Amino acid sequence: MAQSRKEKLNYRCPSCFMRDLDMDMFFDPNTKEYYCLRCNFSGDEERVLYLNEKAKFRYGLLLTRVEQFAPLLEEEEDD
Image 1: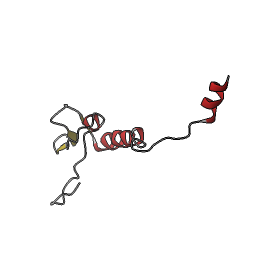
Image 2 (image 1 turned 180 degrees about the vertical axis):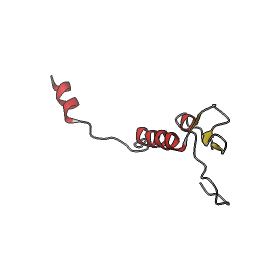
Image 3 (image 1 turned 45 degrees about the vertical axis):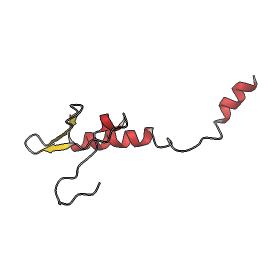
């Protein structure tokens, strides 16, 4: 995400992102946590980064067409 100022980087809310909503999180300097206005998610930077990476891994092949499946599945169908 492009930002015009050099401050804390805005992150996407992992909870909203898994539901196909693109919501920026806000940083609270008093508690040193990020929070989402839409879904009430909050967490420190480490937790937000971990959950965002988990979402990327989970939906990483979303736009890829799978044409060949695991050999174990094909062997079970032959039985």
